[in-house]
Image 1 (tube, rainbow, N blue to C red):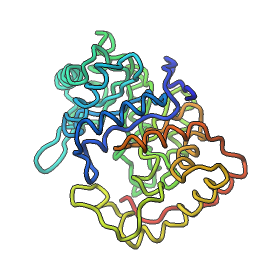
Image 2 (image 1 turned 120 degrees about the vertical axis):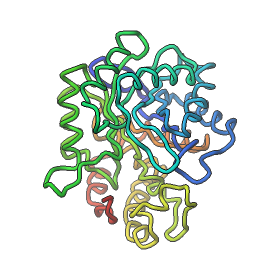
Image 3 (image 1 turned 30 degrees about the vertical axis):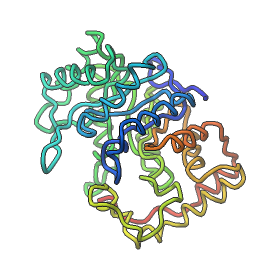
Image 4 (image 1 turned 30 degrees about the horizontal axis):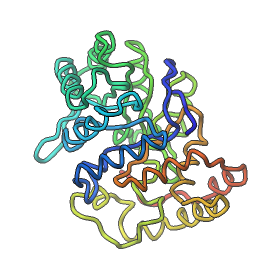
Length: 330
Protein backbone atom coordinates (compact mmCIF):
# COMPACT_ATOMS: atom_id res chain seq x y z
CA UNK A 1 0.00 0.00 0.00
CA UNK A 2 1.06 3.57 -0.68
CA UNK A 3 2.57 5.27 2.37
CA UNK A 4 1.70 8.77 3.55
CA UNK A 5 3.34 11.04 6.08
CA UNK A 6 1.51 13.01 8.75
CA UNK A 7 2.81 15.97 10.66
CA UNK A 8 6.11 17.79 10.74
CA UNK A 9 7.65 14.65 12.24
CA UNK A 10 6.90 12.85 8.97
CA UNK A 11 5.32 9.84 10.67
CA UNK A 12 4.73 7.21 8.00
CA UNK A 13 1.47 5.28 7.75
CA UNK A 14 -0.44 3.30 5.16
CA UNK A 15 -2.61 5.57 2.99
CA UNK A 16 -5.83 4.01 4.35
CA UNK A 17 -6.20 3.45 8.09
CA UNK A 18 -8.61 1.38 10.17
CA UNK A 19 -11.18 2.88 12.51
CA UNK A 20 -11.60 0.28 15.24
CA UNK A 21 -14.57 1.91 17.01
CA UNK A 22 -17.35 -0.09 15.24
CA UNK A 23 -16.01 -3.30 16.76
CA UNK A 24 -16.96 -2.11 20.26
CA UNK A 25 -19.08 1.02 20.15
CA UNK A 26 -21.85 3.01 18.46
CA UNK A 27 -23.18 0.56 15.86
CA UNK A 28 -25.59 -2.37 15.90
CA UNK A 29 -23.73 -5.59 16.54
CA UNK A 30 -20.62 -3.74 17.65
CA UNK A 31 -20.02 -6.07 20.57
CA UNK A 32 -19.10 -8.95 18.31
CA UNK A 33 -16.83 -11.81 19.33
CA UNK A 34 -13.28 -10.74 20.03
CA UNK A 35 -11.76 -13.28 17.68
CA UNK A 36 -13.79 -11.89 14.75
CA UNK A 37 -12.59 -8.38 15.54
CA UNK A 38 -9.00 -9.51 15.89
CA UNK A 39 -9.28 -11.19 12.50
CA UNK A 40 -10.37 -7.84 11.06
CA UNK A 41 -7.37 -6.02 12.53
CA UNK A 42 -5.00 -8.73 11.32
CA UNK A 43 -6.52 -8.54 7.83
CA UNK A 44 -6.01 -4.78 7.78
CA UNK A 45 -2.35 -5.10 8.77
CA UNK A 46 -1.87 -7.80 6.12
CA UNK A 47 -3.03 -5.28 3.50
CA UNK A 48 -0.63 -2.57 4.65
CA UNK A 49 -3.20 -0.69 6.71
CA UNK A 50 -0.89 0.33 9.54
CA UNK A 51 -2.83 3.12 11.30
CA UNK A 52 -5.15 1.65 13.92
CA UNK A 53 -7.44 4.30 15.43
CA UNK A 54 -9.02 3.61 18.81
CA UNK A 55 -9.91 5.42 22.06
CA UNK A 56 -10.25 4.60 25.72
CA UNK A 57 -13.97 5.46 25.67
CA UNK A 58 -14.86 2.91 22.97
CA UNK A 59 -16.50 0.12 24.89
CA UNK A 60 -15.44 1.75 27.16
CA UNK A 61 -11.94 0.28 27.31
CA UNK A 62 -12.75 -2.94 25.42
CA UNK A 63 -11.61 -1.52 22.07
CA UNK A 64 -8.13 -0.78 23.37
CA UNK A 65 -7.98 -4.25 24.93
CA UNK A 66 -8.87 -5.75 21.56
CA UNK A 67 -6.24 -3.74 19.70
CA UNK A 68 -3.72 -4.59 22.40
CA UNK A 69 -4.15 -8.31 21.76
CA UNK A 70 -3.10 -7.74 18.16
CA UNK A 71 -0.30 -5.32 19.04
CA UNK A 72 1.19 -7.92 21.35
CA UNK A 73 1.89 -10.00 18.24
CA UNK A 74 2.44 -7.32 15.58
CA UNK A 75 3.49 -4.07 17.27
CA UNK A 76 6.27 -3.34 14.76
CA UNK A 77 3.77 -3.34 11.87
CA UNK A 78 1.26 -0.98 13.45
CA UNK A 79 0.88 2.75 14.06
CA UNK A 80 -1.48 3.13 17.00
CA UNK A 81 -3.61 6.20 17.64
CA UNK A 82 -5.72 6.43 20.76
CA UNK A 83 -7.49 9.21 22.63
CA UNK A 84 -8.22 10.58 26.07
CA UNK A 85 -10.48 13.25 27.48
CA UNK A 86 -13.94 11.66 27.58
CA UNK A 87 -15.51 9.69 30.39
CA UNK A 88 -18.49 7.41 29.75
CA UNK A 89 -21.24 7.52 32.37
CA UNK A 90 -24.53 5.64 32.65
CA UNK A 91 -26.48 8.25 30.71
CA UNK A 92 -23.96 10.57 29.08
CA UNK A 93 -20.37 11.30 28.12
CA UNK A 94 -18.44 14.07 29.86
CA UNK A 95 -15.12 15.74 29.09
CA UNK A 96 -12.20 15.57 31.49
CA UNK A 97 -9.09 17.55 30.61
CA UNK A 98 -7.48 17.77 34.03
CA UNK A 99 -3.72 17.18 33.70
CA UNK A 100 -3.62 14.49 36.37
CA UNK A 101 -6.40 12.57 34.70
CA UNK A 102 -4.73 12.81 31.28
CA UNK A 103 -1.53 11.25 32.60
CA UNK A 104 -3.38 8.46 34.40
CA UNK A 105 -5.46 7.80 31.29
CA UNK A 106 -2.32 7.45 29.19
CA UNK A 107 -0.80 4.91 31.58
CA UNK A 108 -4.05 2.93 31.51
CA UNK A 109 -4.15 2.98 27.71
CA UNK A 110 -0.55 1.77 27.51
CA UNK A 111 -1.45 -1.21 29.70
CA UNK A 112 -4.55 -2.09 27.69
CA UNK A 113 -2.72 -1.70 24.38
CA UNK A 114 0.18 -3.84 25.64
CA UNK A 115 2.76 -1.38 24.34
CA UNK A 116 5.33 0.93 25.87
CA UNK A 117 4.60 3.86 23.56
CA UNK A 118 1.58 5.37 21.78
CA UNK A 119 2.35 6.69 18.30
CA UNK A 120 -0.37 9.38 18.27
CA UNK A 121 -2.19 10.49 21.41
CA UNK A 122 -5.25 12.60 20.73
CA UNK A 123 -7.38 14.85 22.88
CA UNK A 124 -10.87 13.53 22.23
CA UNK A 125 -12.66 16.69 23.43
CA UNK A 126 -11.59 19.89 25.11
CA UNK A 127 -12.87 20.23 28.67
CA UNK A 128 -14.75 23.55 29.03
CA UNK A 129 -13.75 23.63 32.71
CA UNK A 130 -9.99 23.36 32.02
CA UNK A 131 -7.92 25.70 29.82
CA UNK A 132 -6.91 23.63 26.82
CA UNK A 133 -3.30 24.77 27.26
CA UNK A 134 -3.17 22.95 30.61
CA UNK A 135 -4.51 19.74 29.10
CA UNK A 136 -2.14 19.99 26.16
CA UNK A 137 0.79 20.71 28.44
CA UNK A 138 0.13 17.46 30.29
CA UNK A 139 0.00 15.61 26.99
CA UNK A 140 3.30 17.23 25.97
CA UNK A 141 4.82 15.93 29.21
CA UNK A 142 3.92 12.42 28.03
CA UNK A 143 5.99 12.97 24.89
CA UNK A 144 8.92 14.15 27.00
CA UNK A 145 8.51 11.06 29.19
CA UNK A 146 8.74 8.79 26.14
CA UNK A 147 5.23 7.42 26.52
CA UNK A 148 3.85 9.14 23.40
CA UNK A 149 5.44 9.99 20.06
CA UNK A 150 3.12 12.74 18.80
CA UNK A 151 -0.04 14.63 19.70
CA UNK A 152 -3.31 15.19 17.88
CA UNK A 153 -6.67 16.84 18.36
CA UNK A 154 -9.94 15.12 17.56
CA UNK A 155 -12.56 17.46 16.09
CA UNK A 156 -15.23 14.84 15.39
CA UNK A 157 -18.50 15.75 17.07
CA UNK A 158 -17.13 19.09 18.25
CA UNK A 159 -18.45 21.18 15.42
CA UNK A 160 -18.88 24.92 15.70
CA UNK A 161 -22.47 25.70 14.72
CA UNK A 162 -23.35 28.32 12.17
CA UNK A 163 -25.58 30.29 14.53
CA UNK A 164 -22.81 32.82 15.18
CA UNK A 165 -22.06 33.12 11.49
CA UNK A 166 -18.78 31.24 11.76
CA UNK A 167 -17.62 28.20 9.83
CA UNK A 168 -18.15 24.62 10.92
CA UNK A 169 -14.58 24.28 12.19
CA UNK A 170 -13.83 27.77 13.51
CA UNK A 171 -13.75 26.55 17.10
CA UNK A 172 -11.35 23.74 16.22
CA UNK A 173 -8.98 26.12 14.46
CA UNK A 174 -8.98 28.47 17.43
CA UNK A 175 -8.15 25.53 19.70
CA UNK A 176 -5.37 24.44 17.36
CA UNK A 177 -3.87 27.92 17.34
CA UNK A 178 -3.80 27.90 21.13
CA UNK A 179 -2.24 24.46 21.60
CA UNK A 180 0.32 25.04 18.85
CA UNK A 181 1.88 27.62 21.17
CA UNK A 182 2.42 24.87 23.76
CA UNK A 183 3.50 21.87 21.69
CA UNK A 184 3.28 20.99 17.97
CA UNK A 185 0.15 19.35 16.63
CA UNK A 186 0.92 16.37 14.40
CA UNK A 187 -2.59 15.50 13.24
CA UNK A 188 -6.23 16.53 13.46
CA UNK A 189 -9.01 13.96 13.25
CA UNK A 190 -12.12 15.39 11.61
CA UNK A 191 -15.00 14.12 9.55
CA UNK A 192 -14.45 14.26 5.80
CA UNK A 193 -16.43 12.48 3.11
CA UNK A 194 -18.33 13.03 -0.11
CA UNK A 195 -21.46 13.77 1.92
CA UNK A 196 -19.71 15.79 4.63
CA UNK A 197 -16.97 17.87 2.94
CA UNK A 198 -17.00 20.85 5.33
CA UNK A 199 -13.38 20.30 6.41
CA UNK A 200 -12.30 21.37 2.92
CA UNK A 201 -13.49 24.93 3.56
CA UNK A 202 -11.01 26.02 6.20
CA UNK A 203 -9.73 23.19 8.41
CA UNK A 204 -7.84 21.20 5.77
CA UNK A 205 -6.18 24.29 4.22
CA UNK A 206 -5.18 25.45 7.72
CA UNK A 207 -3.59 22.07 8.45
CA UNK A 208 -1.92 21.81 5.04
CA UNK A 209 -0.28 25.20 5.43
CA UNK A 210 1.30 24.06 8.69
CA UNK A 211 2.31 20.54 7.75
CA UNK A 212 -0.35 18.97 9.96
CA UNK A 213 -1.93 15.70 8.90
CA UNK A 214 -5.69 15.17 8.71
CA UNK A 215 -7.20 11.84 9.71
CA UNK A 216 -10.51 11.67 7.86
CA UNK A 217 -13.07 10.15 10.18
CA UNK A 218 -16.30 8.62 8.89
CA UNK A 219 -15.13 8.78 5.25
CA UNK A 220 -17.92 6.37 4.30
CA UNK A 221 -20.66 8.51 5.82
CA UNK A 222 -21.42 6.10 8.68
CA UNK A 223 -21.83 3.37 6.07
CA UNK A 224 -24.26 5.22 3.81
CA UNK A 225 -21.74 5.73 1.00
CA UNK A 226 -21.09 1.99 0.74
CA UNK A 227 -24.45 1.60 -1.01
CA UNK A 228 -25.34 -1.34 1.24
CA UNK A 229 -28.01 0.48 3.29
CA UNK A 230 -31.60 0.83 2.14
CA UNK A 231 -34.03 3.62 3.09
CA UNK A 232 -36.33 2.60 5.90
CA UNK A 233 -34.31 -0.41 7.00
CA UNK A 234 -34.19 0.81 10.61
CA UNK A 235 -31.40 0.57 13.19
CA UNK A 236 -31.11 -0.91 16.65
CA UNK A 237 -31.57 1.58 19.54
CA UNK A 238 -27.86 1.38 20.43
CA UNK A 239 -26.85 2.30 16.88
CA UNK A 240 -25.92 6.00 16.57
CA UNK A 241 -27.68 6.11 13.19
CA UNK A 242 -31.04 5.51 14.89
CA UNK A 243 -30.83 9.13 16.11
CA UNK A 244 -28.98 10.60 13.13
CA UNK A 245 -31.00 13.09 11.03
CA UNK A 246 -29.54 11.75 7.80
CA UNK A 247 -30.65 8.20 8.50
CA UNK A 248 -34.39 8.69 8.58
CA UNK A 249 -36.11 6.83 5.76
CA UNK A 250 -36.94 10.15 4.08
CA UNK A 251 -33.37 11.47 4.17
CA UNK A 252 -31.82 8.19 3.12
CA UNK A 253 -34.08 8.18 0.06
CA UNK A 254 -33.28 11.82 -0.67
CA UNK A 255 -29.54 11.14 -0.55
CA UNK A 256 -29.57 8.15 -2.90
CA UNK A 257 -28.20 10.30 -5.79
CA UNK A 258 -24.88 10.34 -3.93
CA UNK A 259 -24.70 6.55 -4.01
CA UNK A 260 -25.80 6.49 -7.66
CA UNK A 261 -22.98 8.88 -8.53
CA UNK A 262 -20.42 6.83 -6.65
CA UNK A 263 -21.61 3.67 -8.41
CA UNK A 264 -21.23 5.37 -11.78
CA UNK A 265 -17.62 6.28 -11.11
CA UNK A 266 -16.93 2.91 -9.49
CA UNK A 267 -18.04 1.11 -12.66
CA UNK A 268 -15.22 2.80 -14.58
CA UNK A 269 -12.67 1.36 -12.18
CA UNK A 270 -14.18 -2.05 -11.47
CA UNK A 271 -14.49 -0.87 -7.87
CA UNK A 272 -17.17 -0.48 -5.20
CA UNK A 273 -18.88 2.76 -4.17
CA UNK A 274 -17.05 2.55 -0.84
CA UNK A 275 -13.69 2.37 -2.57
CA UNK A 276 -14.49 5.40 -4.72
CA UNK A 277 -15.65 7.33 -1.65
CA UNK A 278 -12.30 6.58 0.01
CA UNK A 279 -10.36 7.40 -3.16
CA UNK A 280 -12.09 10.81 -3.20
CA UNK A 281 -10.86 11.47 0.35
CA UNK A 282 -7.35 10.39 -0.61
CA UNK A 283 -7.44 12.81 -3.54
CA UNK A 284 -7.95 15.80 -1.22
CA UNK A 285 -4.27 15.95 -0.25
CA UNK A 286 -1.24 13.79 0.40
CA UNK A 287 -1.45 14.55 4.13
CA UNK A 288 -5.00 13.15 4.34
CA UNK A 289 -5.47 9.60 5.65
CA UNK A 290 -9.01 8.17 5.76
CA UNK A 291 -9.76 5.91 8.73
CA UNK A 292 -12.90 4.00 7.72
CA UNK A 293 -14.43 1.81 10.37
CA UNK A 294 -14.80 -1.91 9.72
CA UNK A 295 -16.14 -4.82 11.72
CA UNK A 296 -15.42 -7.61 9.26
CA UNK A 297 -12.17 -8.64 7.60
CA UNK A 298 -13.67 -8.49 4.11
CA UNK A 299 -14.55 -4.83 4.60
CA UNK A 300 -11.05 -4.07 5.87
CA UNK A 301 -9.61 -5.65 2.72
CA UNK A 302 -12.07 -3.79 0.49
CA UNK A 303 -11.23 -0.48 2.12
CA UNK A 304 -7.52 -1.09 1.74
CA UNK A 305 -8.05 -1.63 -1.99
CA UNK A 306 -9.10 2.01 -2.34
CA UNK A 307 -5.45 3.03 -2.01
CA UNK A 308 -4.83 1.65 -5.48
CA UNK A 309 -7.56 3.70 -7.20
CA UNK A 310 -6.52 6.89 -9.00
CA UNK A 311 -9.50 9.06 -9.81
CA UNK A 312 -9.31 10.89 -13.13
CA UNK A 313 -10.11 14.59 -13.62
CA UNK A 314 -13.43 13.45 -15.09
CA UNK A 315 -14.14 11.32 -12.00
CA UNK A 316 -13.41 14.21 -9.67
CA UNK A 317 -15.54 16.58 -11.72
CA UNK A 318 -18.45 14.16 -11.65
CA UNK A 319 -18.14 13.66 -7.89
CA UNK A 320 -17.91 17.41 -7.31
CA UNK A 321 -21.18 17.81 -9.20
CA UNK A 322 -23.08 15.47 -6.87
CA UNK A 323 -25.85 17.18 -4.88
CA UNK A 324 -25.13 18.21 -1.31
CA UNK A 325 -26.34 15.73 1.26
CA UNK A 326 -29.70 16.48 2.81
CA UNK A 327 -30.43 16.17 6.52
CA UNK A 328 -29.16 18.54 9.17
CA UNK A 329 -26.45 17.66 11.67
CA UNK A 330 -27.62 20.33 14.12
